[in-house]
Every structure is written in C-alpha cells, then in structure tokens.
Image (cartoon, rainbow, N blue to C red; front, top):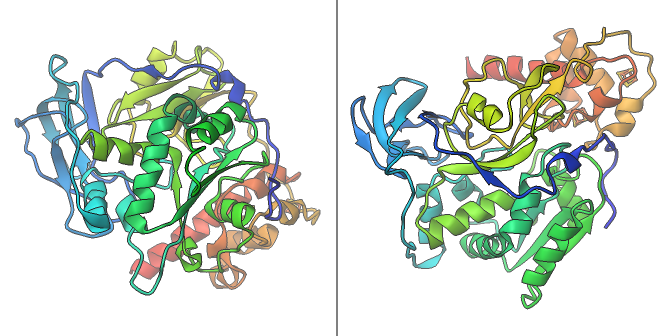
Length: 425
Ligand code: SF4
Ligand code: SF4
C-alpha cells in the first residue's frame, strides 16, 4: 500500500543490524531508578519511603489526575532513595521474577481501569497514557483501531521483533484494545521492509474478519499517527484535531503486548524491549530490560561502546534526543539507545537559506519549514503560529534534506518551548 501523505524521505534504515536477531534479556540490574514522570501528563507522587521493602510489580508512585500513569517497582528490593524526580531501588536478585495471575473485569470501563492501573502508556515513544486514549468523550464514537507497526525510524526494530516473536500476544492485545474503546475493526499497518512480521500477523488473524493487515510503503514518517491513518483509510485528521474526530484510535505494537500482559498475567508495565544499535555499539541487538535500568548497563550488555563512538541518542536518529549521562535510566518511552561515530555526527556549519524549497517538498504536514525556522530564529513567534507552527510533528524531514544544514526542527522545537513557557505564566 503506497503512502497517501505528501513529502517524506528515504534515509538509510540500517535495520539489518538487529532485525534478524532474537530479543535478548538483560540480567537484573543492581539498582533501578524509576522516574516519577515517564509519561505525558501529570507527574506521579511517591507512595513509598526510603527504607521500604518492595515486591516486583508493586505500585510505588501514582497521581489522582486522569492524564497520568502510575509507576511500579520493576525489581524487588529496598527503596534507597526518594526525591522529587525518582525512586531508587536496590535489587533483591533472588526475588525479582514477576509472578501474577490473570485479571478479571466486566465491560470496557473496568478494562480501561485495569490498563490505567498497569501504568500503560504509548510505547512507540509518545508515552501518552493509554487509558486516556481509549476513553472517547460521549459525543465521539470509535469504530476503528489502527495498530501502528510501521516502525519507520531508522535503526529501530523492537516492534518488528515483537511482531515476529510475540504475534499471538499482539493479536490478543489488540482485541482487548478494541474492546476497551468500542472499535469494531482493526487495521494494522506494517512497513514492507518487515515481510516476516506481515506474514506472521496475517496468519494469526486469518480467522478474524475484523482484523486486516496491510504492508505499507517504506517511507519516513509512515509511522506518524496522521500519516498512517491517511495511508490506511484515505482520511485526513483535521488540522488541530485528533484521530478521535474520525472515530479512530491509534495504538502501537508494544503497547498492545503490554495490555495483553496486564490482563492475562496481571503484569504492570515494568519492562520493555529496547533496540541498542549504531556503528558505535559493539554488538547491536534488541534487549528486554527492566524499567529504571541505567543505559550504561544496556550498552555493557551489548559489548560496550566502540572507540569511535561519539554520541549516544535515546530514541531513533530522526526524533531521538542526545544523552549526556549514560547513567540515565531506561523509561517507558525508551524505544532505542543508539551510538553514532564521529563521522556520522559531524557537525556542519549552518549556511544561508538558498530557497530551494526541498524542506517544503519533504514536509509531510504541508508546512513551510523554511519560514517556520526563520520566524522561530527571529523570535517572531506569533507569525510562526500563524503559519501553523504547532502542526509540526517534529519529524525532522526538513532538517534532513536541507542543503544549507539549517537545523530547522531545532528552531521549531525552541519556538514551541518558548511559547509554552509564556502560556504557563
Ligand atoms: S519537522 Fe515539522 S516542519 Fe519539518 S518536515 Fe517535519 S512536520 Fe514539517
Ligand atoms: S531546504 Fe534549507 S535551504 Fe532549502 S528552502 Fe528549506 S531551509 Fe532553505
């Protein structure tokens, strides 16, 4: 299925570094640091104190706000510190295997509550609390679940491996998601560079008339929520609107598996699969890791950084953020830890815009990135807003194609940040 949205780019995908390798499991870390805010929305308040003994999967932080998601102990052990940002637990390695039992529920509301209590958020990187997405307002009816298996960011292959290795859990999870939001069908979009995943999910859903699996064109950002909806349904999410306005809820592969585990095993979100890759990593692979594990432990497990490694990124190369501290913990939103060499991250000097319009052609949101960058740089924020600054999905296509090496998306992010600060005052 061809993309139906404008723009997009074809970067080097480099997925072969990890796509064919089974998911490995990281040994238990000695200590975990669980951030109180691993999601979009209100931060959690600690529910434990220094010195407490906790069991694996125990609730340790929560919020009474609707748009939030609780945090659970990812290991058993002793709470060694609690501060305004995080809870640290020293691991009791003899007691940290999670053992739960299936949860019971009656009706969609109780199912959404279960999903909330399990602390599940969008694991594609957005980290929006899943129970909120599944709770449409009374005047909006959901008919379709779009399951996003595009995984269009270069290097990342977690969803690919999960689809191949845990296909049954994906299918069960999506059925639970449908039940929770009232959707009567699911469309699954998977980029065509994952033929084994497409085949697996087609086989496993062959008897389900209300589940359709589509191979979609390999083009970044095919996995953008709006872009995938356009490709799969031909419909466009209105400017300033949400997929819900079309009766659609979008969820991600790993999120569906987390829902399956929460309901069928009573397991809250305490671990996730992370792609560790890039030319700066000795042994790239996908690793199942407890939340709160230091990034350094993950890198060590993958043979450590090579001598040429110059930059470590949390997330994909297009939308990820540089990591300055390798002791930073893995969070619910960590889909990848990538290490790049000096050659790959060479910093180029920004030059003057030559008005080539390459950025305009590449923009999947039909924006004018060159003007957004110009107005943002000159702090003309109102003018930038007038030309739809906030419609930018920060995909980075514009910066990628710019021959003048203008860091367009950074200017846009700065402008949004400044405007948001002003609004909060
Ligand atoms: S980062 Fe924003 S402006 Fe640039 S291409 Fe993506 S959507 Fe368009
Ligand atoms: S791609 Fe770069 S040089 Fe070309 S118009 Fe856009 S900002 Fe200017």
